[in-house]
Image 1 (tube, rainbow, N blue to C red):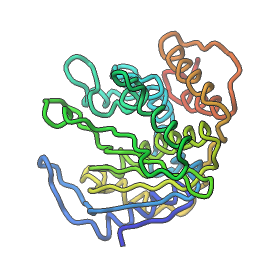
Image 2: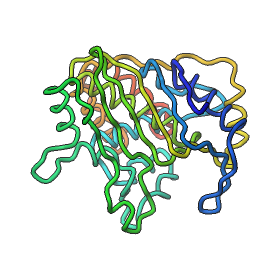
Image 3: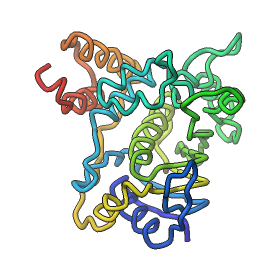
Image 4: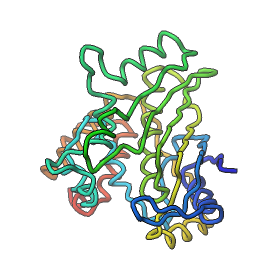
Length: 287
């Protein structure tokens, strides 16, 4: 069965790699060999257990926090991410702009005369707590029809409130289990918690669906090590208390990256935790 229920991102990824290695079939889009399972889904019961701390994975918490800040600012410039990993430049067009995976720009930037997707979805759920229409769209028609190096892997993120709990549902056209999933879970569960905070609801489960869940051949050995992990913690982060603090944290990241300094204005436990994650990057270790 292509479905996992887990209490944390760590637990989920162990089961995910096990299923891909045991049940995945070979597929080679763009000539790149993968092991793939179609129609794969997982649920994380506690979305705050979002950190990947499996030693075998060697996940980059600083990159995850930097990507969060980038999205919160609605940024599209690749250099803010290439500071943490040059690999991001592979997804930018010749002008240095990321066209598909700029999720923050898609949902936080105002639409022509219509407000932002984020505000519109929040207002909808405030007016109708039972709504099934609260969907953030990450894809536009131009993503397919115009040439670009980056085509968004995420289709939508939907929010549903039931029993005063906000549940989130991510739909992916394609998902790399090694390079994609840990960062996707980190970002989308944070967006889920942000929306729950703005709506004044409790945090429900996080649900994730991928039409193609896969691992590339270059990562087979890493997937084997993750699948064999025996000990792991919950990867829990502190609870958010203010969305204003989140945007302040995003600006602090920019200051740290560009000047090596931060304002030292007091932030909440969640935001300080994110800044601590950023500090794990070698270029910021002395900041």
